[in-house]
Image (spheres, helix red, strand yellow):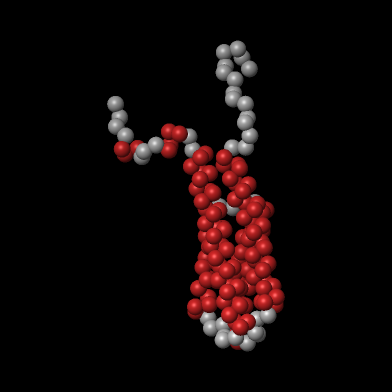
Length: 158
């Protein structure tokens, strides 16, 4: 460095964006993996009646599980954008709506399937909403202070 140049400030730790990116990708992705694996094996653990309506319910769970599993793996391999959160959110909404649209039957096991789908769907709605909130907070924290002020339309030029 030459004598007239200012010294750069020392690194104080991870920047808000980097910290949020790590929280957004790793823990949430692992939780998504767990939920997707549950969607694959939950029918056998709970003991769904494998009648025609229950098979339809399990097919919806398998499809949602495949989407969530692929998104979770992709997020672990390389950080993804907001589209991955929207896909998981859509899978969660599908699981919440499925018991209202598809007949699961009228047995105790079918009731367990309904509760399972709604619970898994709620988790799959909450996780991407949290992930999107972290991303939004991190993007706001990463902006310079001048860009956080009012829009340029409201400013007067001298």
